[in-house]
Length: 277
Image (cartoon, rainbow, N blue to C red):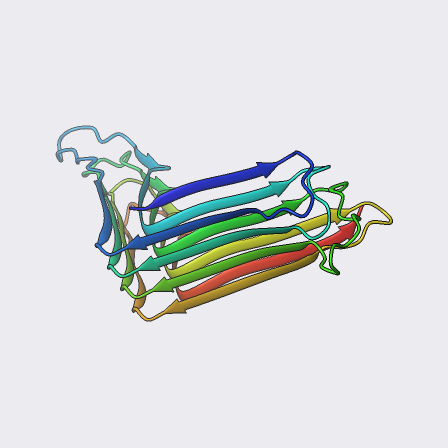
């Protein structure tokens, strides 16, 4: 699926000249899908054989499906620009296809009749992430960038960041975690297992940083973020953590297991920092 990483950097003196623009446009019309299935089979001993301890820990199953992904950065270094200069960073993304991420993690752990067959299932994680459009946009103006230049025809330096995202497709993230401990031993421990699903129609991180030296004029800066989502966005998690013991199992711990589902049509984090160094 479309993935771009754009970077534009100016370091030479330019007066009264447009810089850029740095622009990225992505269109996805087909479906995007990712699927992961992990089955951890530990087996089980027979009734007449010794049953050693079984530990299943820190396994991860992850699926990520994203239709459009862009990282855009425009940097103006010291001595780059004078007055009456226009620099812009624009990002446009359109997704019309379905996006699906599915993850399944199954851990059946069993031991037989011996009292020493202890089971530990800890710290395992199943994660699904699905997104229509994702972008990171950064406009950086360093201190000493000559923003104190004399205005030409009364026009100041203009800096602009514009992000536009449209998601029309259905976005679905589905996660299943099954952790089962069956033991006739003295201990069962099923703790710290995590199942999560995240589905996002449009996701954007926008940042404009302008830093000047004392006595410099501040440039005119703008940050615009527009997001439209028309498709269904769904996140689903199914988590089963089961401890099966007997009268001989006197130490059972099922602690700190977590399930979370997060679905959002439009998400944006936009920040503009204007300061004097």
